[in-house]
Length: 513
Image (spheres, rainbow, N blue to C red):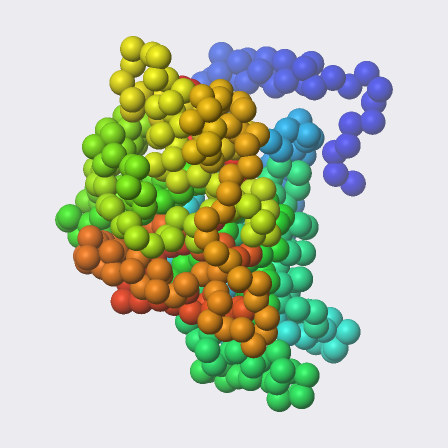
């Protein structure tokens, strides 16, 4: 019975012209009465809106204790049409330019039986990413089946509680509680693939660090024996360590950026970072600038904006790296992309640190992970511009794209080959990787001693940092999940708030205005 224009000569333009004509006549005849009529119309509109809000579903059931009528809302229809038109217009343009890239965030949280997150640190960080103007989606994975009675009703109740926690953190977005009898990793991958529409789909996944990973080591075996492990509050643990690491590997192969967060008393809505707070970025490999971009987005949140200062620690791992050139080059690059940060160069030679965060030949890493360090990027650029009158640090990151990134070969430099020829030269891997077996624990691709040295460096240079940001070690380099978790655990030791990031091999920052 609602108005649906069926007359074949109906025209929106003529209807709009008639509305404007009638409004003008009303003002000309008697402008006080016209304004009074407009005011009454506004009051009626507000009454209908408030009455409709009282019909909201609370806790999965209609709140019948409050009166109200759902009159429908024409603006919902307008917003829906605008949204569908915009989505249809951007279909097929998923590969945005770097200056248009935004983190479309999918946050995975653990919840208890009623849907309350076991930790709000992840939601707090996700809400601070909204400075990127991206989309936020929150997913909780639970073990169960929708074939069981009342499972759907329970999921709706948990989802309503999760939504309330999101609103408490002022995190605007969508939430879903998923019950599944398949693995945790499969559920997360499915959520990533099927959340959103077209270009408005998750490109970044945020997970919390599994602090109790040692206790969860045998969850998979316990489930097979019908002896399911329980978390500290008595709820079923949704994820084993094997599934957790498999999730990280799969997300990388799906070309999704991954953020792994450990939080302890992380600033939340209503807090203000104290004067002198810093966000410290340890930049080791050329990841397309994702660590810089996400740190900058967080710093623009009102919690941090007033008192926080960004610090970039360019980590060198080779005797060929010139600290002064690297510092000047990074400073110049930050000025070009208009990020205000202080730059420090940290030398940590004698260990294979960089190789734990980048791909090398024959190590099974996908093409989306970094392959060059900051120092190697500088040396390539210096060679390419050696005949130029510009200084060695000019245009350091001018070719930030993965298509032109290559690891310089010593033999190629000696032969005086061109940059393109060096890109096609296979780079020998000087690390002595040993093929692993299940009982061959000492031979690790990732060595815990390296993580401990990195942790010592972070604690030495950033003892009071409010947030430390660095790269996520590559999970593809190990076949033993326990060694991978041990490596990350050593990195995070005694650091309250730390964000580990793995990019997708695309360009996130550009000097193009």
